[in-house]
Structures are given as structure tokens and as C-alpha cells.
Length: 432
Image (cartoon, rainbow, N blue to C red; front, top):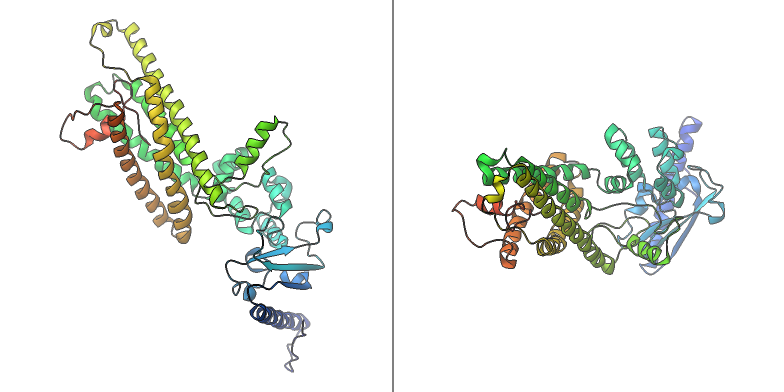
């Protein structure tokens, strides 16, 4: 690298002189790097050897000066490669003697992807120690896969006592909140829509018998709440720093299955992050695996709902023998209802919620992350439309398969919503 040009102007104090000289030097280095990149073209390989202090505070943790980073093409990858033999003895935030900056599009970054000095600065600002972090975050820091932004998001979540308990005590919540700090907002919106529409539909159908049949109402509402929880939980984007296989002794087949699932994103539209490079096949597999998960949720919840409904009806007959003499409504066929509802969740609901969580709330909302009200309103509107559209799809499917009669009980459009909410007396199952 050429030395910085000499200036005759006196800078005053020695510290100010040093700072100005460093600015001039880094500017000159950046210009040389940019000129070399331009001369070599996209097929060249550039290796820059420089003092560690020059890249200690690189642009967004990449280790590259901002002047250089902004000129790189998006398809190119910038990675900080440190001496691998010194990784075990180097402390967090310690500036190495020299860094090797490799700019290439050959392969994704899988180790030492972020500047450790910047990570140390974030931890010091939060007053945290590495040992106090969850083990998966510690492993991610050791591998250099935790970005300063993700670490800062974790510390921001710790400011709220209840959320802090979730992030420390439950890995699933931690992985989802790191990927989307507003995950709990999405969950609350979905549950609010579900509970409100379910109770309104139940009241409109039962009317004066609403309080008398409150046990049925509670059963259906709880079942709907559980199903809606999983429709938000399963397709939600996640960030995990745990390896696909760990030290737990598992049979070979289970270990292979766990390793396979660990390479697939939870949401087909999730952005790749450090250590993960998901291709088209991984994303297609995510849709298939997610569909199987939701189908199993629908199958089990449907069996549970119909079974509990039949048990409640039997208890009512024991308590009130007059019910045994009254004409009985046709009961829902257990297996057929479970299969149809499981298929509906695995195909229709899975695709709809993958799009909502991955595109609307992950990619689009990220562009307006500083506009909290707009992001929450967007989520509410999209999920409300999705709930109504899903209801219409379920009614059509239930009628087509014979789970729901084709007769129309009235001209009110609310009858459609009522028909799809009850499971205790008709061939219907709640929609998600």
C-alpha cells in the first residue's frame, strides 16, 4: 500500500495529528482497493493485508471500510478471515496483528463472518458477559456467526421482564424473536382475531343457549386458540446457532433426520443469514415439511375436539337424562373430519401463513421497521383478510367432502362464519 500524502498543515496536538493521519491513510487505502477491484473486474481475487486496527470497526461488522463496502456488488461476499490457529487463544474484542480480507462470490460465509471487536463493543455497552448468554448464542459467538444487530436485538428484548424469561427459558421463542422481534405482536393479533370471531360465531349460533352450553363454547375456543398458535408458530422465520447434531446420543436414523431438518428453513421465504445458504430445494422442502407439521396439528386437534365434544355430550346425558329422549343431531365422523381438516391445514393454511410470515411480515415489514404503527396495522389487515378467506375455503371444502350440509339457513352472510366454527353438533371444524 502506498503511504499517505504529506501535508504541510500543522494539526496541533499529537492525538489530533494521529487521528487525521489515520483518516488520510485509510482513505488512500480505500481508493487503492477500489481501483484494483475496478481494474480486475468481477472475476478477479483481491487479497488485502493490513493492520488489524484499520478494520476493527468495519461497516456493519464486515470489517470493510464503508467506502469499499458500498462499492462492492451485491452478489459478491466480503468475509473476514482470521488466523485459524489463534482463534482459541484470542479473547473477544482483541484486535489481531493483521486481518486477511477476502472478497469473493465463491462460497457463503460459515465462520468469522462479523467483526469481533464490534461484538465486544455491543456487549460492553449492554454490560453483559458471554457466560450469561444462552448456550446457542455462545456457540454462535465462538463461530463468529452472530451479527452485532442480532446481538443488540437480544439485549433489547431482555429489557422486558416477561419477554426476557421467554428468550432465556425457551429456545423456540428465542429463535423466533431473534428473527422477528415483533413475533409476539403477530401472535397476539392472530389470537385476538381467532377468539373474537369464534365467540361471535358461537353466540350467533347458540343465542339463548350460549351460557347453558358454555362448556362446548370453551372447548371450541380453546381448540381454535391452540390451532391458531401453531399456524403462527410453525411457519415463523427463525435464527438458530445450534449445529444440526449435538452431543445427545440418538439412534442413527433419528440423528440423520435431525440433521436433515436442521438444514431446512422454517419459512420458505426467510432471508439467509450467516452460516446458512438456502437454495430453491431447501425452500421447497420447507413448504413440504411445514405442511406435514400443520397437517399433524390439524389431525390431532380435530380428533381431540370431536372426542371431547362426544364426551361432553355423554356427561350431559348422565346429568340430564331427558337429553337421551330428545332427537340427536348427526355427529361428526371422527376419522374423516380429522383427515379433511389435517389436509386443509397442511395445504391451504400452510401456504397462506408461509406467505404472510415470510413475505409480508419478514421481507416487506423489514423495509418499514421504523414505522411500528404501520407494520402492526399491515399485519392486522393481512391476517384479518386471511382469516376470512380461509373461512370461505373451509366452507367450500367441508361441503364438497360432505362434512357440512349444503343447505342455507338464512340470507345473512354471517351464517357462513357460524357454520364453520362448531364441531359439537354438526359436521364442521374451525378454520385457521
